[in-house]
Image (cartoon, rainbow, N blue to C red; front, side):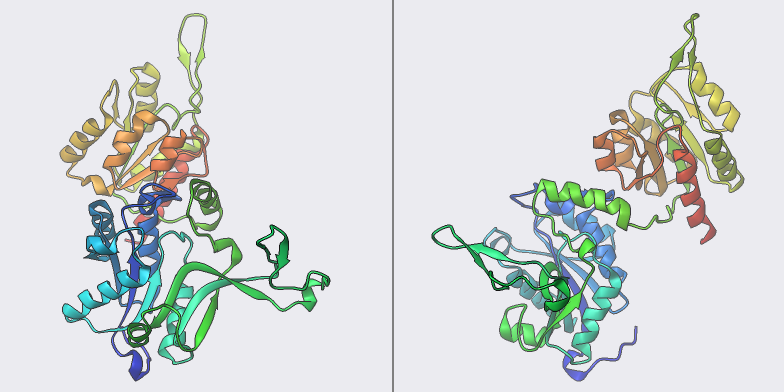
Length: 395
């Protein structure tokens, strides 16, 4: 990658993401999922999406975070215990990571300090931040959003005091000067200046504006829930790059309800739209399997209609899935599994692409890498297949 930068920023532009295993507000916070993707993986993806970033580094004290970060494409630097406690500053973790990189022969010119607790970091904003540093406009910059809010604080006597305005004067919005609220999502600075200052803010400080709707930092369970809801609006539907599709039946191909006639025969409702999708998947040569806990003639009949193999009466879906994948010569990481209820969790944990229908059980939605917009029996299978075929066309 060729970049136009001045001499003081010579060296790599490195995104460093500190991610401790411990967290008080949200246990195992950096591994919690937003939009079906762990926070640490979202941060690595955001950094990798920025064209100005040469290297993505995660500094952590946690084995699981390290493994996931490496799988997502980051280089992992192990953080020592003395820099991993609640009292350790982010700056100390950054300096340690920079020292480790330099010791490895990597010259660091510009640092982008990113926080995994901000799930909606856009790559183009990171590029903007880096450009401010490498083109010598500022020494350090931070992400912030514009606000016209009236801020107050509680005084020692518990009375309210105005901070950024006069309490006896209430100007119109268009007559007010905007202020900027730091989001905590990312900071960028020259490596040399940071080493000298040992703090993220120094010299000429600039602002990189981000949209307020993306300016979210997760510190508690309520904020995590809000971020998960916002992700359904902000995350663009992505292609699902797999070589096989496996689904549950009840609650996926059906709406999870059953009609029983006077003779005790069960009847379910399925989607013709799903059937067309399965036909397209079959023509594309992508293997599919239906994996069901139940033993029911309806499941077998639907499988025959779709020309899809069916495994029924499966108590351990993860084991059955692993055996089928081995027979097909397909890596579990290359499989999408679509489920809706807790008996799908084992199989979902085993594959590279755990997918949930829109009306899935909350635990299933939390485990999913992708939560679809359609419910079971209402086109969810077709939605998944279209996203799989979209990736297949780009191969």
